[in-house]
Length: 168
Image (cartoon, rainbow, N blue to C red; front, side, top):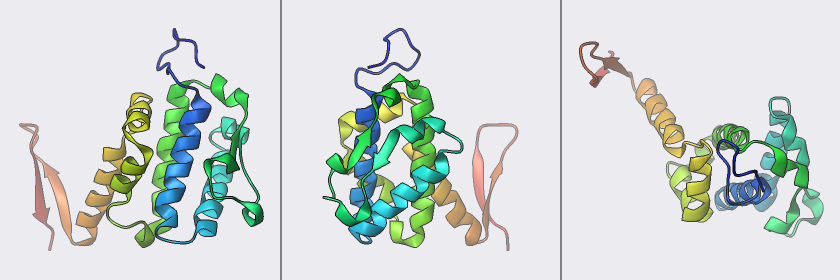
């Protein structure tokens, strides 16, 4: 549990937040691929993100060959609960973004919506409180979709209005 005087303090342990986030991502991905693939991707991305977020070393995923495909396959050291929640939020944001990109077209258009539904309102509110912006991830996909269809966003500098226009 985080000291309530800390900025971004939670009423729940970081370890519970990350476990629910990971299992929710895995469940969504498993519905589009295989269980083994979804778990392997999470393991790979956690390993890659450790270079930027050393505290991710406190998370262990069981051996793929003996998984029960449940939250019990994810173990998180109590040291993870000492990390500032805002730092955990930044890591979760990057993890979700990378996970979605890694799955590519397999993720599907409604990946974030499915993830929010599986994560549940309680944990969605918690990750939002620590800085995870799922809408931003959705917007990035929409903006990329516009670019590949030869549209661009042009801002009107005299106001806060943006326009979408065809480039060709």
